[in-house]
Figure 1 (tube, rainbow, N blue to C red):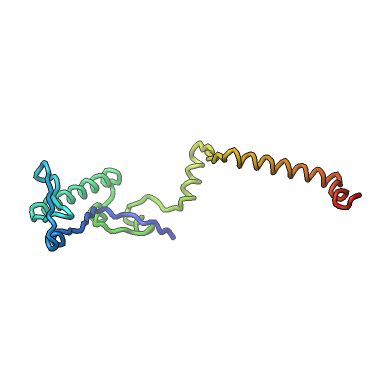
Figure 2: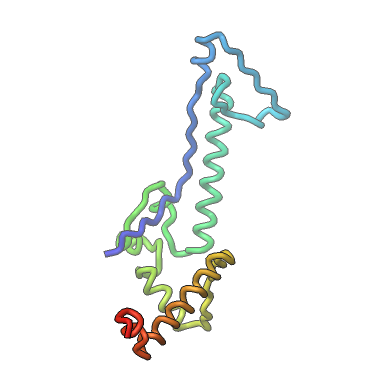
Length: 161
């Protein structure tokens, strides 16, 4: 079962508006812009119906551009059926032609490795000099103790023989 979520061809914008709270507390807010539609909605100022309509127009335009992009890359897709802002899980997205096939990320990577020249890239974190020196000293001490053990020197050392 695939639990990937696909779709959501839609646009959303939301913002709180604190204008009444500011007015209630006698706090003035000024917004200065250099164009009629530079700021259509604001979180602090008083929003107008004209600004709200322009904002909705802009959101609809972004949605249209989004749908055009999807249609360009998936020409057989019934865009009006799927450009509702909804999302679908794996098989349901496949049924709506939002994807070509379903697979896990491991399956995808394995397939890509089979079809391509893959090189191993490894990240090695540099250890500080003190830590590297400690590892070298530890390895040397381990080696020395192992040689003593192999030669039977431990038993002579601990028994006094």
